[in-house]
Image (cartoon, rainbow, N blue to C red; front, side, top):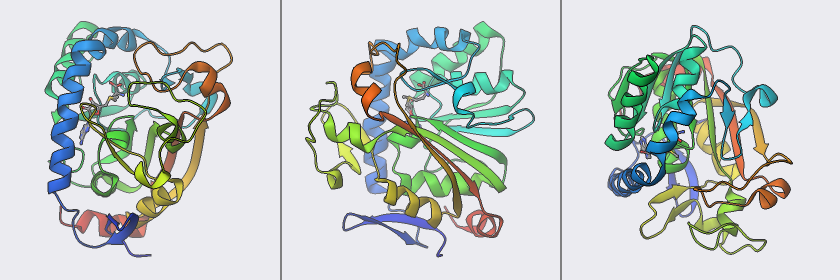
Length: 287
Ligand SMILES: C[S@@+](CC[C@H](N)C(=O)[O-])C[C@H]1O[C@@H](n2cnc3c(N)ncnc32)[C@H](O)[C@@H]1O
C-alpha cells in the first residue's frame, strides 16, 4: 500500500507521494472562511453558549448521544486535536472529561466566540488559527484527531487527512463526523432541505462549490477508504446516523428535515487508527 498524500485525478482519489497542490486549497479556504464568518454572525456565535453549557456529548444536527454510539471511548489523559473546531464546544466536552484538546480553525470569528466561551465557562485550552491542511505544530503530538463537520466537510481531504496522520502518534485515532453523499445528492440547493430525488450526480459532489455557500467535500465511501489507507490509516468503523424518532428539524442547518433523516442516513462518523508502520512515513512526509 503506497503511503503519502491522496490526490483527485480525473474524478478519482489516488495515492501520491507528492504534497497536494495548493492553489485549489487556497481558494476553498478563503471561500469557506467567508462562509463561516457569516455563519458566526447569523447563528454559531449565539448557539455556542448553549453547546458549551451542555453536559452530554452529542453528534450532529439531531444531537445523537455519544452514549448511544460509543465512538470515542475513554478520552481522559489523551492529547486531542480538533480540526475545524468552530466555537470549540466539542473540545470543551472532551476537556471536561480529562482530555487535553487543541482547537484548530480557519475562521477568526469562530475562534473569537470560542475564546469568549472559554472565559465565560472558566475552561481554557489552546486555540490556533490555521488551515487544517497545513498546521504549524510538530508531528506525533496527539493521540486523537477529531472533526465534527469541520475540516471533515470543509477542507479537501487530500490535504487534511495526511496532516491528521502526521500529527498523530503511532496507533493514534482519527474520528470524524460529516454529512452523507446521499444528502448532498438530494439537496436542491445548499440552503434547501433534501428531497426524495437524486438531483446531482455522485461524481460531482466529491467537491461541491456553490456560489455564496463555500466549498464542501463529499468523497464516496470507496474514495474515503482510498484516502484513509493512502495516509496510513486502518478503518475501524463507519456509523451512519439517522434522526431519532422524536427529532425536530434543525432551524438553521437546512440539510434535511427530521422526517427525511429518519428514513435515510444524513450524517456519518468514521473511526480509524494510524497503523504503526505508516506512522513513521506520515511523520517524515514533507508538508
Ligand atoms: C460546522 S463548523 C464545525 C465546527 C464545530 N463542530 C461547530 O459546529 O462549531 C465548520 C468549521 O470548520 C472550519 N473550517 C473550514 N475549513 C477549514 C479548514 N480548511 N481548516 C480549518 N478549519 C476549517 C470553519 O471555519 C468552521 O468553523
